[in-house]
Image (tube, rainbow, N blue to C red; front, side):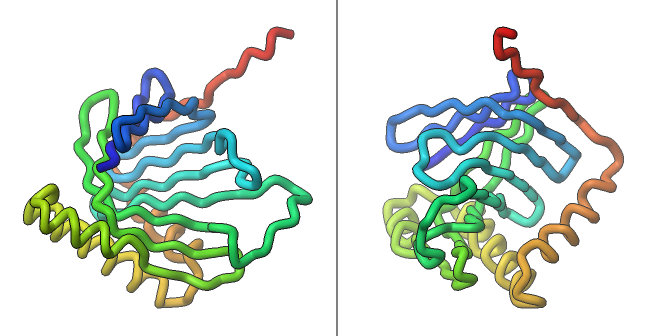
Amino acid sequence: MKHTVIDFNQMLETVNKDGRKHEYCIEDMQVYENYLHYKRDYINHPYHEKIEYHLFPKENIGIYALSQYPDVNINDKDVYKYYVDMVSVKKEQDQWIIKDLYLDFIIKSDKNYYVVDVDEFNDAIKSMELDKEDIEGALSGLNNILKGYYKSFDINEFMNSLIEIYSKDRCKIFDNTRRLDYGT
């Protein structure tokens, strides 16, 4: 199972998956009551350069928008443009803990889209790794992303509609841009 911690103060994303821990520096982050957005580099990938992440806890979805290095010649059918995790979120004062609920929706650069990891979701149910609330959250998230995407087949339109709703929440909890020191 994958758990991710977004630490507001350290501007750090920590991913724990399969006994491994990876930490990534976040460049820019805004957190609202029910919406989190950040940008960071995609570390050690041959063609993905940046990640822009949009987390919508009430929708049970986290959307990764992936951008590629310029002038990389990769077949569009092999490149993920958007990767949507079905998730549950535990909010704490200085961090949010994100539990991946296995079901995923991907859109590739050739505009083909897929629901993936249904087998992993089913295995997690059988092994009782997911409880009833997790199962309902995963299915609700999948329903939300499919309905939203199918309205116009434009994920950005759907994302922007959610951003408009959730960035108007009562207050912005956190807003920061990392100041990088390049030793100049």
